[in-house]
Image (cartoon, rainbow, N blue to C red):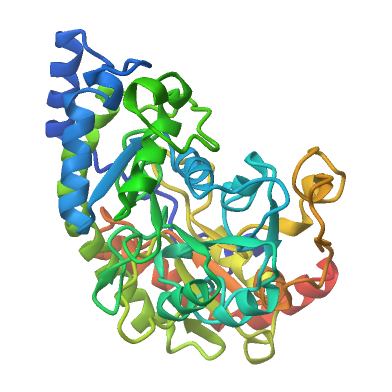
Length: 437
């Protein structure tokens, strides 16, 4: 049997995997037409027909409304901007608390800080890895204003239970759907279940416009506030006749016509790309489920998974070596992909629990928990969310080898790398001890 690459042997594969690039001829032609027109953006920061953007921005918003079955869609220049605008639209203010997930991209938790509110971290569910209803309920206080739910990796959170808690306590719910476009929960698309849903069009998402995002809602008042926050709302409130101007100092969160031109065609490809992700993920679920101690993430009944990343659970006791050593060994057998080159497509953990970041410990802002109007006590130390910490440091690993564009041979190479390392895992025990991991 060939020696493991991490120990000096020949890897299963050296040729880069295919690039993930859903941009095609349609997008290129659409961008060329915008370039030829010279109208790269139509926004005007004044009360005017073009306050809402150009024709392609509006076309993208209309297609998004139809695709997701929502009343309002507001295009923005990033999902981060969408989350910030969502907090403003919800009326979040200094002294308020917003319950957030500790296991997600940083903006999902810093969004409340933009308006001086305090993020309160609730632990995740050990199966779907999203913020759990039980932990949300345990973190409620009289200061709680809203909940930001992240459908992490593409699996929906337990939205029915979360919405019941929110309605019981008069809270607003923002869904971060950056990794979960067209994921469903009991027949409903995520993003259309809470009060506001935010989607990402960043370059490494399922579909993209380079940078960009879309916020959706069925609430016309929230939609108006999102539009005002997107485009210098303070300038237009008098002419528009807007009565409630709380938090309506607007930003420049505007999407260009160039980006919208790409998005108009990208959204047409989304369902097909998701079908391919699910098919490839099913291949790895079947293959790796035969390895004792490695368990594919189950999909909750009544839900569909968007598979931004494919997640597995690692049992060190059953496998016999630490997770980090195993994943390093698998990674040594496989290259990256074109357009990624030196970035691995497999990793252990995800992001360090957000409450352990320095910003929450060194008082890097003068708002949030440092605000004189905040009457609570925010905790951010180790041990705050034990399920999250166990998943990150010991259990969870994920890969991107399920992306569209991978051939049957590509998938086979990845599976063979897992099998090769698993079958020779006993040779890594000494390495594990030497590294103290």
